Length: 549
Picture (cartoon, helix red, strand yellow):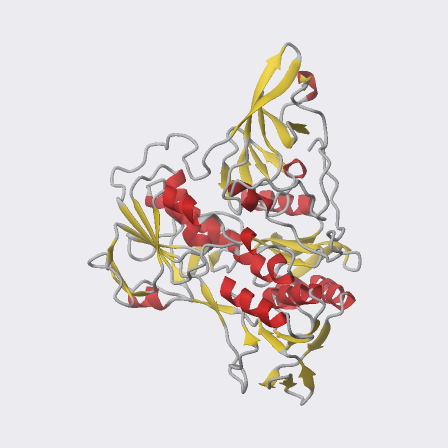
């Protein structure tokens, strides 16, 4: 794409390596942040001043030009002879849309694969929930000028909704305020739904940016004001009601949700189950000591931060994505970290040996010590005792050995289960008035040739959006290519697709230089692609998978 921005991997001003930061969250709250690149330094506006104009002939059909207007980066796009201008920074974490992919009349962010309409600025696909600004364009003879910014309420419908089925529910209840639940609620409003929307969740902090809990926030590089998805008043303004309680049961015949602690009984016309997952906990002596933590909620992250202020050594049990991100965050706080895990290489089962070796080497260069091929036998107030008897000092212990889906409510409601809640391509459960989305849902995936369940934030958001639109009768099959990212120091891994097993892994690039791609191939099909600092290749892989299910 024209007007490419330079990628950087420099540390922030504090000297502490960091991950990409959610500038879009601040914009939502009406706080104007400094423009920053991913290194934390101020960004110099690139390209021409579009208010002064460019030669119209310089913008070719099917291309973009990066420029700026009134101190903000702007992306010009020409699609089928029409010219559009939108904000050039992704509304999710501020990614440079000029480095992404123009696909029809949409543009994809290179960082986390959010998708925006170049016609309206609408956020069409998570993880971005906010639109980018739309700018009005004028032709002045042979000159093309950007003249003014057009902003709107991010939860308001972008356009009148298309016709839907005649029987639209008037009352939607959503169980769970995580990624899937909040995305469903927002999409209902963005799609023009005017009925009641009620979200039930006992977590008084939700909804928030869960991926950041183990990244910049835990590392001390992100203030807590970045963590909420939106301020509470934004939901209230759109009549999205939160009930801070747990659900005790679902009566599918009466179409009723019962709450604990004497809470009200909620009738529903449509119900979204988005109960998510919970951390797997150790069952060894000492695993319930107060300095032993898991990380799933904002409260969990706060507790780890509070403990980290007073310790010099920590043990992370489990070389999972969450465990390794915690290790990186604690190293940013200058805490000594030992990672204990049974595998030979971290993440080898998911990412293969090349990526596993790259991640291990990166963490070791940052001072992390690994005890691989080991398990924990006991935890004491100051040590973790390994199976071979070694005693690893640590005044803080974080357990990251995986999660399991919360299926109790679905089971009680009598829904079909198979290592998750069984849904069809429209995310409908065995009860036609109940949809399931997020970590609990197992859906039929044409690329995998079987049903799959994926525990990733972006997938959960996209499922929530699809479920909401199908509640309204759009009948959209869920066909999104799974995507997730994992950040470690100044490095981020992008992963598109889904590969539970493969025949071979085709690796290009260098693990030592943290510049590689790994393609997971079964037969003649690429099932998944993992990349490090190859954003365009990751986007290209996603587009290829979308084109050939």
